Length: 405
Ligand code: EPS
Image 1 (spheres, protein in one colour):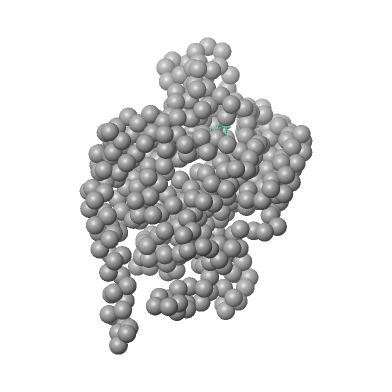
Image 2 (cartoon, helix red, strand yellow):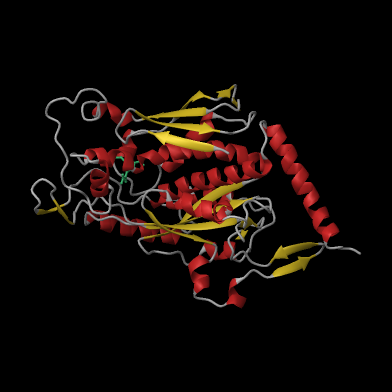
């Protein structure tokens, strides 16, 4: 079983993560993690903080000469902004003259946080609930991706919509129709999306979205959107129907939902298939040459909680950022009077970043399921187990069903 924990406040000294359970001998390059960290910082519509930070990782343990040791991997990402917050965020004695925050922002964790943890200062809620924490998750996800690459599994994402602006030719339809080249690699999607300042795949859509972000920013408002995350190169058989918590889709949905501000997750055609009929929803199984294939991929790569071998397609919906420059109504907790919410530096749109984070979360889940199925203390052992299973898979099906008899 692999697991990870992150720690760190948004304006504290640093973010840290501990990863446990990866086999030895996986190549880990700091530059690879930094590359994905910088992708998380991109996107038109981010706030002032992204100018202050240029996230890079320091690998503190678990890696020697760029190879995992099988021991816990610990990672550190410094917060450049910390030097502006040393008084307000010191773990030491409280300095004089630090103002409390008493006005909760609707939609953020401010109110539930003070209620739950018995705080008298909303700052205590804001810090850990901030999406800053996702930088640590991207670092963790990069380690998972480095592992998955040995098995030809790649992950990519794109922004489908921002502020209800959808593309004319939705690439998602192509994916769901399984209309893809033989050598399709999901990472190619990200390579294309990363060329766009809002991570969309159509130039016209990008122009429209940027216009909309500009106008919403002028009004002091924010936007949300939808994104799609895809994984390719999977073997058949990750996950299981034998228990609810062994289903691959259970864990994927939870992982995407865990990203700050995500309020909806869909696998394959999910919600639209609920409005459709059976014969238009399911993927026809057909014979092509000597193999059995699915005509489409509306199931999003998962049937019965098990990977089908086709790309995993998961879609997420992110609500608009909760901090508004033209704030909405709330209550001041000290005066109990209706007031307008506090303004706090924030992003106007973070859907492009959210999509990058979702790649990391999907990578983590897939790495966990790969290791659950194939195990191994060293990468070589995992590979042997993987090869033995995948090489014999077709033969086993043939034998069991007397194919060619
Ligand atoms: C973020 C850092 C934060 C925010 C954002 C994400 O920095 P700061 O609060 O100093 O501006 O920009 O967090 C939120 C949108 C949020 O709601 O908490 C980051 O590194 O991604």
